[in-house]
Image 1 (cartoon, rainbow, N blue to C red):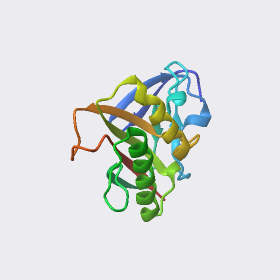
Image 2 (cartoon, rainbow, N blue to C red):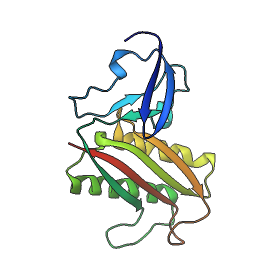
Image 3 (cartoon, rainbow, N blue to C red):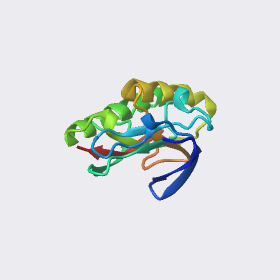
Image 4 (tube, helix red, strand yellow):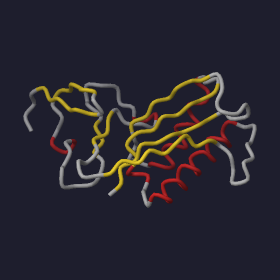
Length: 162
């Protein structure tokens, strides 16, 4: 691929980047997600996410609704870190029910009650533990409250199925 300016169409958003190497372009025959972290943008991987993800054309899309930190009985710990860990366990259970793996998650949206910088370490550790090197695109949205008052965290996902 040339070093000319490239255009990637991702979810209706055109991201203009410079010189994306061949390894970061989508292979239409491969059902793997392609992670794109352009060199001329901030590297988000230390914080547990990727700039953009390209989904294969042939894949089906599944949307996983927000998973909170409730255990199987519906109980919620009052601790943020415990809720985050449980929410990612719940997300993994939802993926398993779809027959999907974490490396098929293209996008996460997380909602954090009363977010502050001190919570980022907990979030990053949990995302990296679940996704390893296959970090999905991610948006964090601070919120004043969630569906029920004890909830402190919620994560939803867009998954591409083979």
